[in-house]
Image (cartoon, rainbow, N blue to C red; front, side):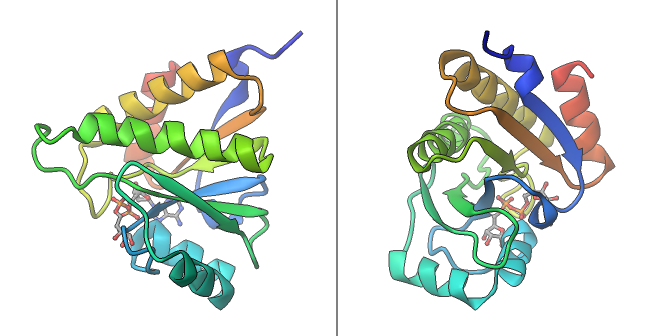
Length: 173
Ligand code: AR6
């Protein structure tokens, strides 16, 4: 029998670059440049081959995602998704953020990644309100896992006490 959706979701506080999962998701920018935040940390940990792979791809639209190898990371793949910049909520930020999670999981399935870790996309530099973003992240992942058995495990990697508390509340843990 397949595992229940809730048993396939974990919270992991800490640095996503250290995680031993098939794929980690990067909160990227549209140019796929190394940048700062979690993106900068992933690029530093994966090494220059990741920067070159991203430069070759050239870019990614908001709400969309592309995969590369993980290079020096433990993770075999990095799935780069571009979250929306928060403009007050009337520019389809919610829909675009949901699309980031959904598209990243679709790509994970296509490349055969069965365990996937997400940072809290858009909640840093892009200023998406944390609680609202957490609700979207959790709802979208739950929906995907309930419909599809290709992914065994999704890890919400929280960076800081505030994000951890938001995810614990949303997941009821
Ligand atoms: N591991 C896990 N989560 C992290 C880490 C880490 N090592 N470092 C930061 N976070 P942000 P965004 C959390 O700003 O808002 C970049 O410059 C952080 O606490 O990285 O989508 C890109 O290049 C926050 O909760 O991403 C883009 O230009 C979350 O990761 C832009 O920022 C996302 O924060 C993207 O902005």
